[in-house]
Amino acid sequence: MWTALSQFEGQFLLWVQEVLRQPWLSPIVAFYTKLGDHGLVWIAACLLMLLWPKTRRAGWAGIFALLLSLLCTNILLKHLFTRARPWLVLEGLLPLVTERDPNSFPSGHSSAALSCAAAWWQYLPGPWRVTAMVCALLMALSRLYVGVHFPTDVAFGILVGVLCGWGGRRLEEKRPDFCKS
Image 1: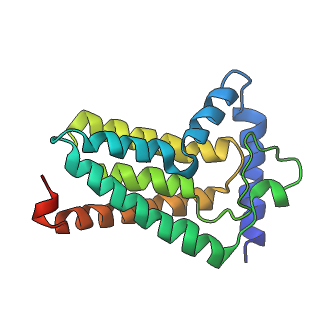
Image 2 (image 1 turned 180 degrees about the vertical axis):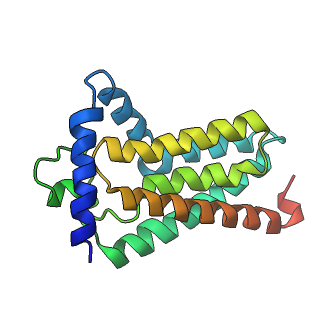
Protein backbone atom coordinates (compact mmCIF):
# COMPACT_ATOMS: atom_id res chain seq x y z
CA MET A 1 0.00 0.00 0.00
CA TRP A 2 2.75 2.44 0.95
CA THR A 3 5.38 1.53 -1.68
CA ALA A 4 4.76 4.08 -4.47
CA LEU A 5 3.96 6.90 -2.06
CA SER A 6 6.95 6.04 0.11
CA GLN A 7 9.30 6.34 -2.90
CA PHE A 8 8.20 9.90 -3.64
CA GLU A 9 8.18 10.87 0.02
CA GLY A 10 11.53 9.17 0.53
CA GLN A 11 13.10 11.36 -2.13
CA PHE A 12 11.72 14.40 -0.31
CA LEU A 13 13.20 13.23 3.02
CA LEU A 14 16.59 12.61 1.39
CA TRP A 15 16.40 16.13 -0.06
CA VAL A 16 15.67 17.50 3.44
CA GLN A 17 18.65 15.55 4.78
CA GLU A 18 21.01 16.74 2.05
CA VAL A 19 19.85 20.35 1.57
CA LEU A 20 18.00 21.62 4.64
CA ARG A 21 19.85 19.97 7.50
CA GLN A 22 22.53 22.24 8.90
CA PRO A 23 25.14 21.41 11.55
CA TRP A 24 24.11 24.38 13.69
CA LEU A 25 20.36 23.72 13.35
CA SER A 26 20.20 19.95 13.76
CA PRO A 27 20.85 19.85 17.54
CA ILE A 28 18.22 22.55 18.10
CA VAL A 29 15.57 20.73 16.06
CA ALA A 30 16.47 17.38 17.63
CA PHE A 31 16.09 18.90 21.10
CA TYR A 32 12.77 20.52 20.19
CA THR A 33 11.33 17.35 18.70
CA LYS A 34 12.32 15.35 21.81
CA LEU A 35 10.32 17.81 23.95
CA GLY A 36 7.26 16.31 22.28
CA ASP A 37 8.08 12.73 23.37
CA HIS A 38 5.05 11.26 25.13
CA GLY A 39 3.38 14.66 24.75
CA LEU A 40 5.34 15.92 27.76
CA VAL A 41 5.69 19.56 26.71
CA TRP A 42 1.97 19.73 25.89
CA ILE A 43 0.96 17.97 29.12
CA ALA A 44 3.13 20.37 31.12
CA ALA A 45 1.59 23.38 29.36
CA CYS A 46 -1.94 22.10 30.06
CA LEU A 47 -1.15 21.47 33.72
CA LEU A 48 0.29 24.98 34.08
CA MET A 49 -2.87 26.42 32.52
CA LEU A 50 -4.97 24.65 35.13
CA LEU A 51 -3.32 26.77 37.82
CA TRP A 52 -4.90 30.06 36.65
CA PRO A 53 -8.63 30.67 36.32
CA LYS A 54 -8.23 32.60 33.03
CA THR A 55 -6.52 29.66 31.33
CA ARG A 56 -8.18 26.78 33.14
CA ARG A 57 -10.65 26.00 30.35
CA ALA A 58 -7.78 25.89 27.83
CA GLY A 59 -5.91 23.50 30.12
CA TRP A 60 -8.86 21.12 30.40
CA ALA A 61 -9.59 21.29 26.67
CA GLY A 62 -5.94 20.48 25.98
CA ILE A 63 -5.91 17.52 28.36
CA PHE A 64 -9.05 16.10 26.78
CA ALA A 65 -7.60 16.68 23.30
CA LEU A 66 -4.35 14.93 24.24
CA LEU A 67 -6.27 11.92 25.54
CA LEU A 68 -8.26 11.73 22.31
CA SER A 69 -5.05 12.08 20.30
CA LEU A 70 -3.40 9.26 22.25
CA LEU A 71 -6.37 6.97 21.69
CA CYS A 72 -6.68 7.76 17.99
CA THR A 73 -3.03 7.85 17.04
CA ASN A 74 -0.94 5.64 19.28
CA ILE A 75 -3.53 3.09 20.35
CA LEU A 76 -5.65 2.74 17.21
CA LEU A 77 -4.23 4.08 13.93
CA LYS A 78 -0.54 3.20 14.30
CA HIS A 79 -1.45 -0.43 14.98
CA LEU A 80 -4.06 -0.49 12.24
CA PHE A 81 -1.75 0.84 9.48
CA THR A 82 1.68 -0.41 10.71
CA ARG A 83 3.69 1.75 8.31
CA ALA A 84 7.44 1.36 8.87
CA ARG A 85 9.54 4.36 9.83
CA PRO A 86 11.35 6.01 6.90
CA TRP A 87 14.89 5.03 7.87
CA LEU A 88 13.83 1.37 8.04
CA VAL A 89 12.82 1.36 4.36
CA LEU A 90 14.83 4.19 2.82
CA GLU A 91 18.47 3.54 2.11
CA GLY A 92 20.70 6.46 3.05
CA LEU A 93 18.32 8.22 5.41
CA LEU A 94 19.91 8.88 8.80
CA PRO A 95 17.50 9.82 11.59
CA LEU A 96 18.70 12.46 14.04
CA VAL A 97 16.75 10.98 16.98
CA THR A 98 15.92 7.47 18.13
CA GLU A 99 12.36 6.20 18.05
CA ARG A 100 11.46 2.88 19.66
CA ASP A 101 8.04 2.59 18.03
CA PRO A 102 8.53 1.07 14.55
CA ASN A 103 5.15 2.40 13.37
CA SER A 104 5.15 5.72 11.58
CA PHE A 105 1.59 6.51 10.47
CA PRO A 106 0.24 8.89 11.66
CA SER A 107 2.69 11.09 13.53
CA GLY A 108 1.88 11.08 17.24
CA HIS A 109 4.02 14.18 17.87
CA SER A 110 2.13 16.10 15.18
CA SER A 111 -1.21 14.89 16.46
CA ALA A 112 -0.48 15.78 20.09
CA ALA A 113 0.89 19.22 19.21
CA LEU A 114 -1.98 20.18 16.93
CA SER A 115 -4.59 18.73 19.28
CA CYS A 116 -3.46 21.14 22.00
CA ALA A 117 -3.10 24.14 19.72
CA ALA A 118 -6.56 23.52 18.24
CA ALA A 119 -8.10 22.95 21.69
CA TRP A 120 -6.53 26.11 23.10
CA TRP A 121 -7.54 28.26 20.13
CA GLN A 122 -10.98 29.07 21.51
CA TYR A 123 -9.80 29.92 25.02
CA LEU A 124 -6.51 31.82 24.67
CA PRO A 125 -6.03 35.46 23.63
CA GLY A 126 -4.89 36.14 20.05
CA PRO A 127 -1.10 36.30 20.47
CA TRP A 128 -1.04 33.15 22.61
CA ARG A 129 -3.19 31.13 20.24
CA VAL A 130 -0.98 32.10 17.29
CA THR A 131 2.15 31.23 19.30
CA ALA A 132 0.66 27.85 20.23
CA MET A 133 -0.21 27.11 16.60
CA VAL A 134 3.26 28.09 15.36
CA CYS A 135 4.92 25.93 18.03
CA ALA A 136 2.66 22.99 17.12
CA LEU A 137 3.39 23.31 13.40
CA LEU A 138 7.12 23.56 14.12
CA MET A 139 6.83 20.34 16.13
CA ALA A 140 5.16 18.65 13.16
CA LEU A 141 7.81 19.91 10.72
CA SER A 142 10.59 18.85 13.07
CA ARG A 143 9.53 15.23 12.55
CA LEU A 144 10.41 15.53 8.86
CA TYR A 145 13.68 17.32 9.56
CA VAL A 146 14.90 14.61 11.95
CA GLY A 147 13.84 11.90 9.48
CA VAL A 148 11.45 9.86 11.61
CA HIS A 149 8.23 10.42 9.61
CA PHE A 150 7.08 10.57 6.02
CA PRO A 151 5.22 13.75 4.98
CA THR A 152 1.87 11.94 4.88
CA ASP A 153 2.46 10.72 8.45
CA VAL A 154 2.80 14.33 9.53
CA ALA A 155 -0.12 15.57 7.40
CA PHE A 156 -2.48 12.95 8.83
CA GLY A 157 -1.11 13.57 12.33
CA ILE A 158 -2.02 17.23 11.89
CA LEU A 159 -5.51 16.30 10.66
CA VAL A 160 -6.10 13.89 13.55
CA GLY A 161 -4.76 16.50 15.97
CA VAL A 162 -7.09 19.23 14.75
CA LEU A 163 -10.06 16.87 15.02
CA CYS A 164 -8.99 15.81 18.52
CA GLY A 165 -8.56 19.49 19.46
CA TRP A 166 -12.15 20.11 18.37
CA GLY A 167 -13.22 17.06 20.40
CA GLY A 168 -11.26 18.31 23.41
CA ARG A 169 -13.08 21.65 23.26
CA ARG A 170 -16.42 19.85 23.02
CA LEU A 171 -15.57 17.68 26.05
CA GLU A 172 -14.51 20.76 28.01
CA GLU A 173 -17.87 22.38 27.23
CA LYS A 174 -19.67 19.25 28.48
CA ARG A 175 -17.65 19.09 31.70
CA PRO A 176 -20.03 19.24 34.69
CA ASP A 177 -20.42 22.68 36.29
CA PHE A 178 -19.21 21.50 39.70
CA CYS A 179 -15.85 20.69 38.07
CA LYS A 180 -15.46 24.07 36.37
CA SER A 181 -14.41 26.28 39.26
